[in-house]
Length: 231
Image (cartoon, rainbow, N blue to C red; front, side, top):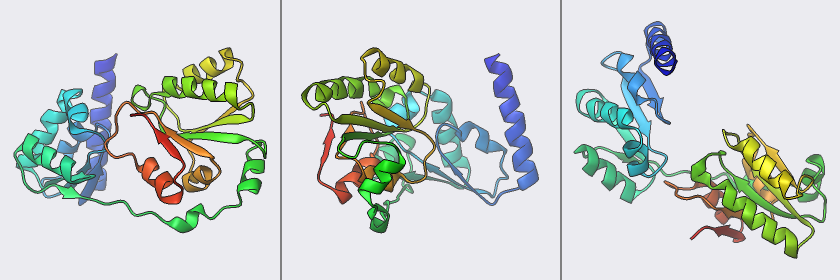
């Protein structure tokens, strides 16, 4: 079944490239193996969102595709900081990787905290513990549940706000329910108002096992010094 799904994806992407005939493609999240169907003169940019060792050691097809593209096509890696750029250049024996710094629009953090909480049915006096991230092993939601459970024992007004989607979302929800916290958390998915949501948090927690560059941490840190991360 996996091979059939893969063949169907290849056929779909190949047909898409042939019909759209793009001049520029931006790729991320494990899709490099499909880019070979683009025309030879197409400019290809690939953003590395996590530690290169994790991205490529866990997906050899992606590494093989990246190695071929970086030496045979108009292909450029986009990295998140200087250390990542050096690691990518060394790993693929190139010297043209780019560093793209992320800008932050501070005006988006200007939000009425009380009204926004009311809109989400979060108690006005709640101590909101917040997290933004996909529900996958990398983001370490199990540890987040442990943290919140302990906070709740010390502060009955604690409320957990999680923003994201992913394969482990239902599992995390079930864990919280089993702990008797069914009415003390909220999960929001597919949101476009992340800065506004982060503004209503009293503390932001980043329990990730690893990150390439946690943009949400920069968001929170630039807006407020109240944050915590796993160390």
